[in-house]
Image (cartoon, rainbow over all chains, first blue to last red; front, side, top):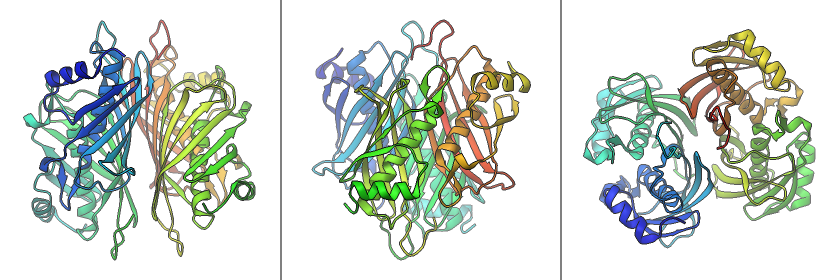
Length: 139
Length: 139
Length: 139
Length: 139
């Protein structure tokens, strides 16, 4: 790993101040984030919105790549696929991210999203990231 | 079609006051939305965030279903797949949605997202919706 | 579970004689299949074709649903998303399937596909199935 | 365009003799293929199998990339997302492919699959391809 938890948190605080969620752990090919759900994340009927869930999952994979490759490589999301499994209640969301591939040009990972205190997933997300070449950044 | 443009706009204003974008047109199996991009939609480097783009696309398909089936059926997103094609500049986003299938239990549609004034798409989204039975709503 | 391994194998032999792979295990929400790769599954350059990998993954989830719900419900694939992670060599493929949701109307699962003897995945697939109502079968 | 229809057909006959479908047209960012459905493509109940549909769609996008970039770049499928809309009857399948992006490193396209003689789509597919660098081919 290239960055530990405090280094990742400091990087995000500087570059993504309005980001989704707080990083709880980073590990080899993994990251875990928690989102304190607020009014801005809700949908009528008392459920967390889909874009909130997708934004949290996307951030969790971005963090896993960042921690493992370091800040030199700014990963860009090229594909995101989300399956919504259950309506999340109004509680913290937990995203458990795991990279399936961390190549020179492409990274692919999966995220399972839970409601705090419940072990049944509310959503499952896979996403692909383009890793720009170090000298340039065109895709 | 079950609802015309003013009926759709009134329904959204009442039920989704914090929603993504303004409905410009609805038609048989189609809808077109515009999002006035603000600071809350941006990412560092001056680009519109992925969750904003996905939220707009999801809303556009929801609107196309609503206009064609009416408010009796509350469609629930079960799958969303987004391909991000180009970095969107900081301009209005336009979402052109089209249903590919509008069945009794499932609806599937695609959305092309453009930056205002540019004819190259910035993103392409497909999504599936579960249409609850009229008497009950369990999936 | 509604069907054990011999019952699943007998059902597939009768209804899917030309199917993908042999069922090795079934469990609560899981199934494991093995495909003996033959010439008909290959692509130029000595790799297993994408449709072969996707067909095996789709069959593995179908088997997991079958074992857990029984043969009364004929699941129909409505969405399949595949991420190809590495070029599979010409060896048996192993598919490990796990259901993420097994609802009354929709089932969602994920599959990790390996080459025999290698613990790095060659592909990851998620898919959604429509479960027809018992009295009728229209989607 | 880098290759016309006879050049594409000759390339496929040499490199993909066991491929899916016959190329009917190629154009700027587009291709159209036809698959004469045979027993090997069928599922019980008289319908074309999902892997057949996905293989045809994948081939159609590969052909569109090939015709537009030429044979120097061997595109590799990295992601494929399929929505199955209706059960295809036992008739020729037609795949209409269109590239949404044709970049230096990544290409993204969509395919609508029809049954011959019917204007309602049976499936819709999007897929992403990695375009290897000309000097090397590692992803």
